[in-house]
Length: 233
Image (cartoon, rainbow, N blue to C red):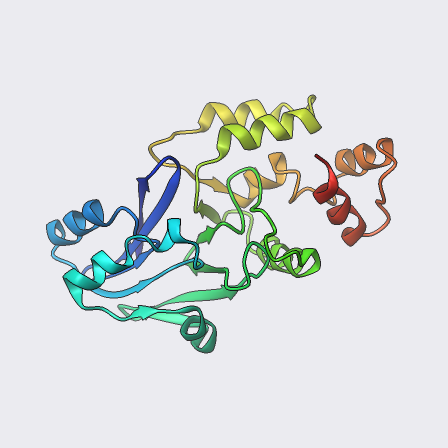
């Protein structure tokens, strides 16, 4: 069984190490010093280095890892072409999830999803591509995963996300429950949690539909509701 370890760096970035008994994969290696220490302590062989997308705050550790391990970076084109990475005989699935950027991807291993800036814990990323429909299709891929899927995001935006969610749904008591369980030392949620608190995944929930109708925003279809939610300041 593969394990995932989270590393915090910068103000709120989160990078990840997927590893087994012998081998490891780095995703968004900005915390390269701490990651290298962990790799050496566990006597792991770093096989792969890659990123959830090409923004500098996620790729900032690439050069340092290459200098230490001379590893080739798995670029977006490599990831999409293969559709998976094998580590110690286990498959890590790659999902193409454009929206935040054209080259955004998510990594799915066992019951864990490393979602980069596509899906945060409690919210979603900015749609820098301008392609809201493409982003919507990416989110639809994610919401079809099992509800017990653990979401490991690219940033810790939990407090801001919950403030926004509470402003939209002040009567949603699940938001307070979510905040009480929040641990800055290990930031995660399950998809089930997200369906309770994340307005951008709750576009089929009756309370969200009522909210949109109250604001006189389109709510007839899933796309209407998604587009309306993305338009609320």
